[in-house]
Amino acid sequence: MAKNKQRKNTANNKPTQETSKASSSAKEERKEKKERDIIYQVVSKRTSDVIKAYITFTYRVFHPGMSARLIIYGLLIFAPGVFFFKDLFWKLFFMVVGLAVILLGLFRQYISLWITQKNDEDYKNGTVFTYNFYDNGADFWKGDEKFSELARYKDITNFYYDDNFYYLAIQGRDFFVIPKSAFTIGDAKEFEEFIYKKSKHTCRWIPDNFKDRMKKRRAERAVASRNLMK
Image 1 (cartoon, rainbow, N blue to C red):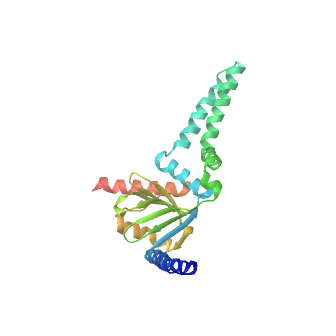
Image 2 (cartoon, rainbow, N blue to C red):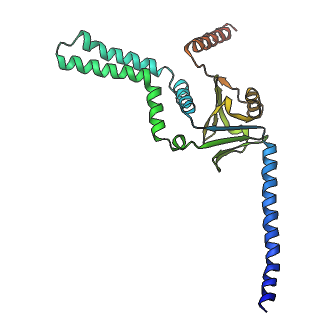
Image 3 (cartoon, rainbow, N blue to C red):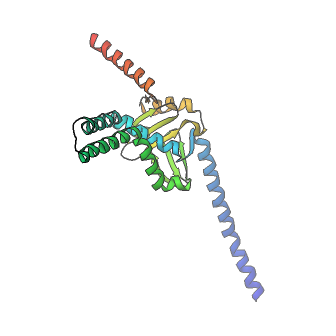
């Protein structure tokens, strides 16, 4: 009797095991198909270079000239302490405050970098980020968890680049710093053209150094002058 019952249970378990195997196989097939559909893939970590690139980008695009203004303000505060006040307290006060503002203007990117490194858990844990770009959209993963997606490329609001990174902003949601060296699928040099074709957003150049910034300003002034002459 017991043997018959055992054989019955064994027989009943076979379809369940076969169903589980079929389900697992189907998931693997879907995963493989999705991987085949990836046109561009970026695998990166939130390293010091990535954090610094993001900080530098926000300063250059959203707060241009702020460092220069802080240095000028610092000099204006510092000067009275040197030339006008004879009382030692006020002399030191203006000199110390002015020097602090000057140093902030010179090193604010590194200060922000240090604060971010100290508080960012993804940086400290070495979390791996994977960005997959398909023909009709993209998804963005932190480890094994999808944290954002791009349903259509028309939702891209801004697209920039410099020598080492792409900067991609999605409407109402996220901003991504994409290292050009982190492409595991697709050619980083062709990524700009791909995004333009899909979103019609021109990839705007953000100069890395003073020489390139001057070059860009001269080009912009030349274009403005030609437009005025028309």
